[in-house]
Image (cartoon, rainbow, N blue to C red; front, side):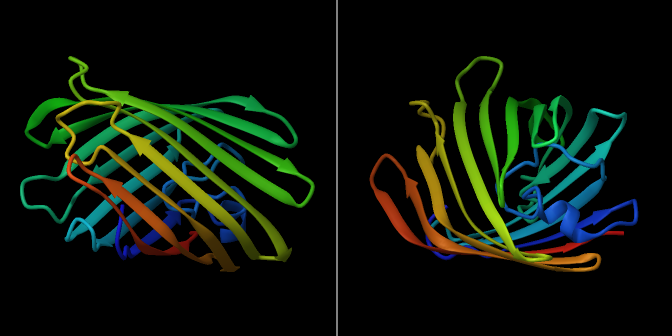
Length: 234
C-alpha cells in the first residue's frame, strides 16, 4: 500500500474481557495475525483509503476458537467493491504454547468472489515472544492458486512495550512479493512505521503511521500511510 491509507477496524469478542489482553499480543495491529494466547473470538471490520491505488477497501475478519488450540478464521475482502467481494475461510492450530512463546499455523482459502470457486490457498506461520518488557510477533505467509499462476509471499513484524498499563508503543513492518507472477498488478508492496495503542476496559485504539511502498511493472511509489484501529471486547 502506498499513499495515504486509513484503516478503521472494530474488533469484538464473545467473551467478556479486557481489550488489553488482545492488544498485548498485537491483535489490534493491522496486517499482523496474532500468535496465540487466551482464546478469545473476535471480529474486525477494516476500512482502508488507499491514495496510491485510488480506492476504498473494506475487509472483515473473524477468529473463533473451536477447541483449546484450534481456531476458525473467516474473512471477506473488498466488501465495498461491487461484485468483487472475496470471501475466505480457514483454520489456525496453536503448535507451540510456552510461558513466553506462542505459535500458530493458519491455513486459509481465499476465493476470487462469492460466485467464483477459484481462489488462493494461503499458509501463515505466526510466532509471538515476550522478551522482558518487549513483546514481538512475526508472520510468514505463502499463498498460491491451484495452477501456481498467482503466488505471493509476505513477511510481517510487530513489536511493542507497555510503558503504562494499557498503553503500548512500538513499531511494525510488512513486505509482500508476488514472486514474479505476471497476473498480479502490484508486484511488491510494503509498510514500515510506528504504532501506539491505548486500551480502556473493553475498548482499544491503535494508531499506526509510517511510509508505504507499492511497485508495479512501470514504477515503484512511496508515500505516507496512516492506520487507525478501533477495538472493542464483549
